[in-house]
Image (cartoon, rainbow, N blue to C red):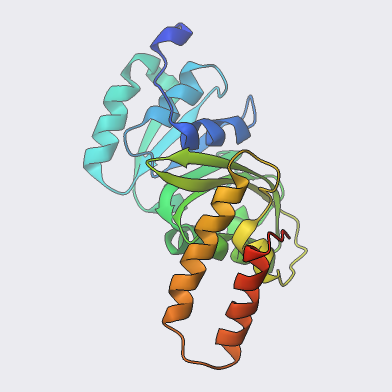
Length: 228
């Protein structure tokens, strides 16, 4: 039996990974997809939150770092080299964390694993870019965005998303896609301003027309302080 380390040797998690860890269900077997340095995997297993963690990465070098970070945890962390969720079998885990990737990559990983379209799985998603694309995809594909936590790291605001499949697909409006469920959280106003700035940059590349008019209307809503 592996002896758990005391809390003072657990790795330090930044605001993004701390928020992601909080959405992982206690007692769940968890896949950390794109585990990179392995800090989240080590924390989840070392804190006792998860009895088993699968640390997975596409590249051998990050996975080697994760092995070193989790070495003291013995068989509480398993390591898988490969793309996305292809390294995990359906039913092998209950919670899935995908952090630090762009929105399109996260979407492609989920689309390539149709078994996650099941309410048994708890998804924790931390897109590095284009948060609105993930929110739109979740809604259109029948996932409920259950909760979000804003996290400030490296000078930027990130949205840490917790989602689960319901099968009830819907077409989300623009405000929801841009701002999600962060209203009332510390930094929410700054996050909305960040999203508005990105939308304005996108608008500058559009020719005048219906799409440009819709974007202008959405910018006006954001500048007026509206929320979904």
